[in-house]
Image (cartoon, rainbow, N blue to C red; front, side, top):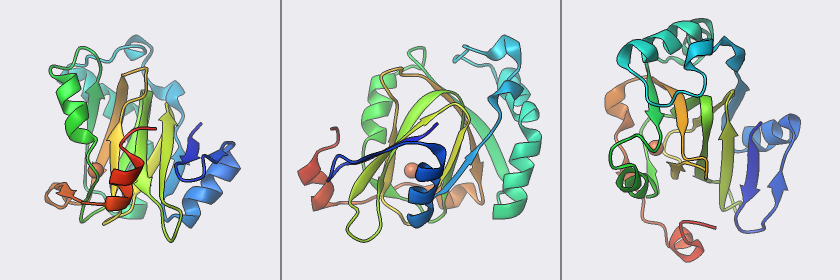
Length: 184
Ligand SMILES: [Fe+2]
């Protein structure tokens, strides 16, 4: 289940209804998928072949198509990160830069865990949204954010796109974030 931590106040929000209510106020979609659908032989596997990624897409096909029909996504794929990923440290350093996209960024975590750091609306400031397997989140378009791994350092996620070209990362210079620091 997702956990929220508001950086400015240190407030922690737990429990699915509280998390959903907070994210709803931020315009962030939050849903849950049944990770029991993950094929047994792929559980605990974070270094995936293209065939295994396709198998994951087939396993979650109904969930993907439901989300796509409601929100207009036309393409989807699987991304896997772990210690086996070449240049993982460098990748994570690249990820840890606040940016925006011209379309929303959707991730369904099907194994492992990850963190979206998102700039909240109004005076909320940045909040961390820690996601575990089964959590599905959508960062709204033009909302400053970045993604990183947890200490577990591994994740498998389904990504959905309206138009992959709308998903280019635009750096977002934010004195507020610089003052807070990238980690906490
Ligand atoms: Fe992003």
